[in-house]
Image 1: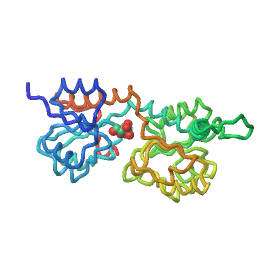
Image 2 (image 1 turned 90 degrees about the horizontal axis):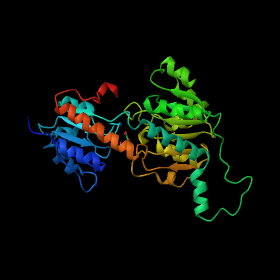
Image 3 (image 1 turned 30 degrees about the horizontal axis):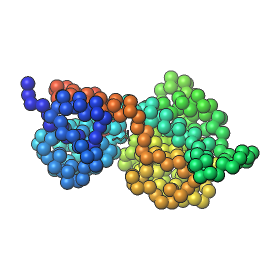
Length: 327
Ligand code: 8YV
């Protein structure tokens, strides 16, 4: 048989995934788990057949230009590929794959966790206990907002948005959504979901907004300062998608001015840096990008990376190929 492909893995992956990769491919692992520097990335794309990447690798057109003849596949560990210039890669004959599906339920769970933590002030309450401020029950202390009956507006009704809607239904939330196109009538009926063609109109009428679209040029700052101001002051905003979709400074300003009731954020515009004003808001629940951070999801994501590489290696079309027109 032909030689095994040289696969360079940019970050540490779960042990069992790394072991399997070593068995199947000529694998080079990053044992330090520090993200690759630009220099290391340039060096890697110059001499591998496959780059197993993650969100911490900025694979832009100028990096793609430095790729060697051998590089044929960028197998991303993660669903979002906004850190990869897919069009530039494809133009050089480099295929890009991702890992959709296996992180859907876990990301939806974390979305509900953030939604509930934000409305019910869970982190504030826990912090108060830690700080010794729980000196006795009081009728008007730590009051949050009821979840049941509220209107939830989902931006991006793909796999994750739909999984969130299913959970939210069980909590008695009313489902509304904005998407490039309406979902099938079967799903719309199941979820009793209302489609809003106009994002502006939906924003003005929801109690909770949750973001589930990919980050593309079309969704960058989709929630601009102008649009954020359309949300009523009692509303809360949840984001487990990508920070760049929201104008983070405008959001921090609105929270500080009391013009928005709260935010639950797992992703940030300039990750891992977080807007200092946002950090100071007691009504902002902030998490370190952990939507897919379960043992199960990360192993399954690794399995998907392996299947994509293996399928390509065997001369077939990888199951999770990303095409520019899909973005
Ligand atoms: C990962 C994610 O943590 O899949 C995604 O798009 O944001 C997360 O699952 C990260 O992207 C891994 O590269």
